Image 1 (tube, rainbow, N blue to C red):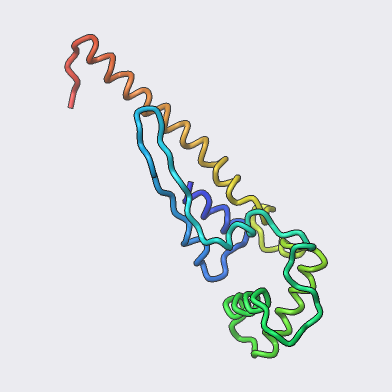
Image 2 (cartoon, one colour):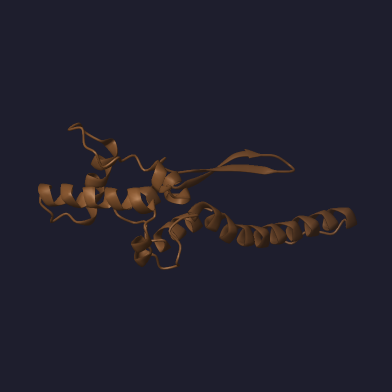
Amino acid sequence: MADRAKLELAEQGHRASGRGIDSIEAKITEVAITRIVGVILANDYLIPVDTGVPAARVPFSGVGGGGTSKYIQGLINWINIIKPGLSAPENKSFAFAIAYTHKKQGIPTSKSYAFSKNGRRTGWIAAGLAATQADFEKDLEVLTGIVDAFENALISGQRIAT
């Protein structure tokens, strides 16, 4: 699942520094006779990347109070990664332009789809799970066949080739 989720994020165009994609990992948390339980771990900010953010929930009013905004600072940090040649004033201006667009359209914006290779900008978790499910089911069929053959050999007393 982790590899498929990473691929989906990259295909959606969500690769600035690569830290989000690199943060995704799968861990098996429980193994029992009848089940396997696992979790997918990722940086917290990848949740709104998965779900999107409606315009009404974008944390920007457009009316400055002269203070600092974590949202604007996050945009500035991201812009430093994707456009490192911008001056500080250009970077700040770009961040506010993005914030105004987010406030009108939500996230993702209509123009952000230009960065997607698969036409999606959200839903990386479900797409990763769907792609993984088919592979998992194939692997499970093979494993079931091996277990069945082993059990049949034990029942019939056959010697198992090694």
